[in-house]
Image 1 (cartoon, helix red, strand yellow):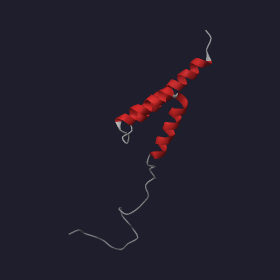
Image 2 (image 1 turned 120 degrees about the vertical axis):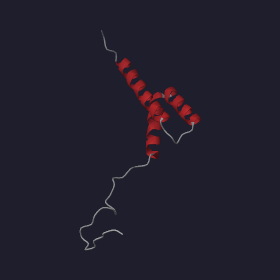
Image 3 (image 1 turned 90 degrees about the vertical axis):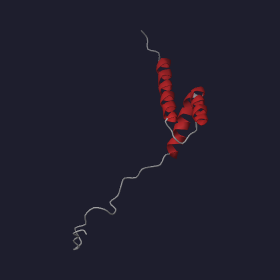
Image 4 (image 1 turned 45 degrees about the horizontal axis):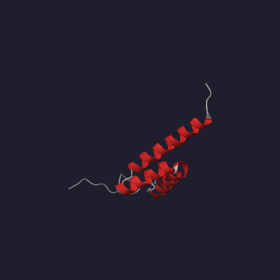
Length: 85
């Protein structure tokens, strides 16, 4: 049984298209028409559209920065003691 490289290539492209299609359907910032149109383009122009839409929408996501210590919590450097009201 000969393993054909074209089968592997088409399987990878199909998995990539499936991944990007699911990624697009889960986006909240797109309307239904936009989702359908972009998914159709992903399947009509497999590699270029899938990578292009994924990179474009990935750049639109809000980057979460790690939380920094700010306010709240106990500060041991003060001599103020509170007993409440």
